[in-house]
Amino acid sequence: MIKTQITITGGPNHAIKHLPETLAEAMGEAIGSWHSDTLPKHFLRSAHARYGYKARSRKWIARKLKRTGQAIDLVGLTGELKRQTTRAIRISTTKTGKHAKGVISGPRYLYQYRKGPSRIDKAAELLEVTNDEAQKLAEQVDRDVTDRLNRLTDRQTIRTA
Image 1: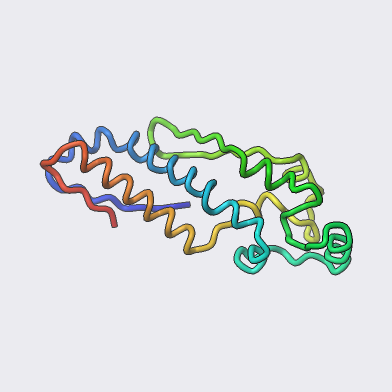
Image 2: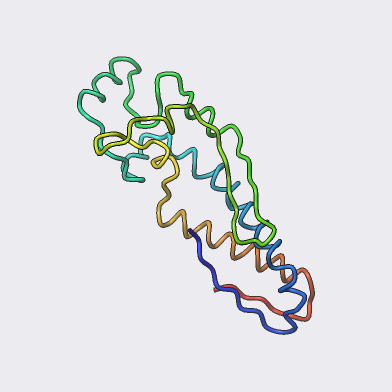
């Protein structure tokens, strides 16, 4: 979740009127940026350490090395998960600007699995972000909202903190 604080100086009525749609557009762009920039990093060898994935068993690692020659956590035999999730995203926002959502499609095994302490939630691993990535997305939203609202009128200054 990204939280932001907006400070408006000058005549704020015009900016406040456009704030919800501006915020929704900026959040939608941040989701698109996550999809194109951050999501592909989940399919690299370094992703296990970067995102803190749950440890795989020795048996799983040995079986995967034998079948594919590599043991990258979210890259399967066919690469179907990577292909489906990085292909397209459907972004929707509410008119109030309070919520923005991105929907990606993936294979059934991404969300249909037996839940339990020893099971791996691949969907949760796929959506994991580091603190630096979350900060970068928050700064992008702040910058976009500020720029968009400042373009509405030149009699006010809008700063995000």
